[in-house]
Amino acid sequence: MTTQKKTKSNRALPAKGVDWLHNPVFNKGTAFTEAERDMLGLRGLLPPHVQSMDEQARRVMGNFRSKPSDLERYIQIVGLQDRNETLFYRVVMDNLEELMPIIYTPTVGKACQEYGHIFRRSRGFYISSNDRGQMEHILHHWPTRDVKVIVVTDGERILGLGDLGASGMGIPIGKLSLYTACAGIHPMQCLPITIDVGTDNETLRNDPLYIGLRQKRIRGEAYDAIIEEFMIAVEKIFPGVLVQFEDFGNCNAFRLLERYRDRACTFNDDIQGTGAVTLAGILSALRITGGKLREQRVLFLGAGEAGIGIAENIVNVLVEEGLTPAEARKRVWFVDSKGLVVKGRDQLTEHKLHYAHDHAPCADLFPAVKSIKPTMLIGASGQAKSFTREIVTTMASLNERPVIFALSNPTSKAECTAEEAYTWTNGRAVFASGSPFSPVTVNGKLHVPGQGNNAYIFPGVGLGILCTGARRVTESMFIVAARTLASLIRPEELAEGRVYPSLQRIHEVSHAIAVAVAEEVFAKKLNAHSRPEDLPGYIRSQMFKPEYPDYTKK
Ligand code: NAD
Image (cartoon, rainbow, N blue to C red; front, side):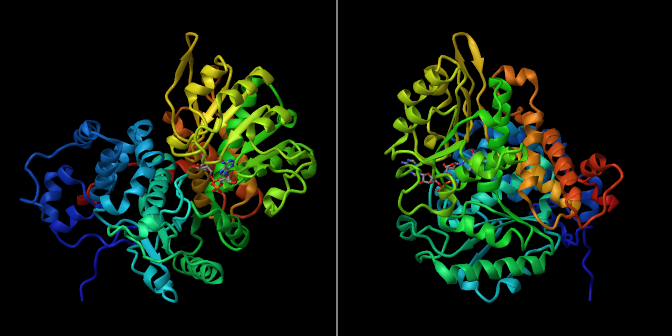
């Protein structure tokens, strides 16, 4: 019997020449050196000229920029990820501002909508309701046990696009790419998973090219049993793994978070990640407006995962600052699809009940703005154009520097555009959005909108958790992450109206967040690993660098 050679992470090395080229983890393409070509049996399988990684990267970006649409750019770049992961991360890390809107929102949303039609090669891991009773068994099919982070979706609420079923797989793949690109978590330690319990999207079910089960969503106890089996199976196969829940429907997301947060190392990015990144934007906005958090009246449009997640973080900070939870919640108001959330309104879920204050009913946002006089208006409703000119100008008449965040994704769903927010307020708005907008000049002054991108938070939080072996994910870790992020914005960035640092600084940001989160893990004694003497140095040493190894030295 022959023993197959393995990497440090216990992943089997390819056996023969051509296998090296077809394995994205090990492939160097035209950059395999002469010595490697001899040693690995690659002679003849590659063109004779050995290219440097720089040359390869230039070729990739040249092709990328020549594509006619963002979806084509997505297809090209994900194709590279499927062929050569190291080169993929090299170009993503070197061109993050240009590539993030392609590998993540907004283009990934379009890609998910077209998933079955643009499908080329399977990536990630699919568990369907047909796999009930066998999940632990099939997880053995994944080629490594060294998985440290799972991002899982059931595809029910993909960005602001609704139920995309198994086509939602683009989201866990994209999020995990950001774990690596932003915080250097090794790609081999990342596992994207889609749980396919069906879809209530009839158009998809009738699409012959749809990749998922053609059945309505399983719900209720049977659904819960699937998630339970999944959580037990992943913990068994990948002990201590961090499980990030992503784009689950509202009706399941909160429940599952409550059920598993004290049983597993898990969090929900739509609730907690969004909560933290927006809290950071709010804290930065206060550095511009000069106010204190306790003096704000924050009005949300949309009381779903994002809105409630942000509100909970605001409340947690106010409680840290000495307010009672009830006093803190009084600063936060919600308008949802049925109008202002007020005491006595019918059928309010538990999360909304906390924010139901004494007030006359208001059917929609405009009268609510006039009555509540918010200092901050935050859109997380998925309703495009709902911050109308009259609403935005009213915000400007109420506040010297109105804070207006239009967080709904993708770009087409934003409550207002950056240009609208700045022009309607004569440049006085402090604006951030969920999807990126270009800078806007009003009266000769440049305004740079912030993108409240969760990628500022979750990769750094994940890195801090991995480096300490944290057993649980706490709310305090997200608050620490938000405070760290807000503290990193430089005065010259604030002067341009930015409430987030430039994405070019994302590695520094993720590292700083990881260090702060790790300190919190040690303080709460949630660590499985002991504290290294030089914590920042140790964390930096764990960050993946997209460099080709020399296989002749292995
Ligand atoms: P969700 O489905 O959980 O919640 C949507 C909420 O909007 C619900 O409370 C619903 O009642 C409300 N709503 C729907 N129609 C409305 C209307 N006409 N008027 C007022 N309210 C209405 O979704 P979610 O996870 O909270 O996400 C909402 C949006 O926020 C999405 O577009 C998502 O892409 C975006 N988001 C942005 C970020 C970010 O910027 N970092 C992060 C997460 C989510």
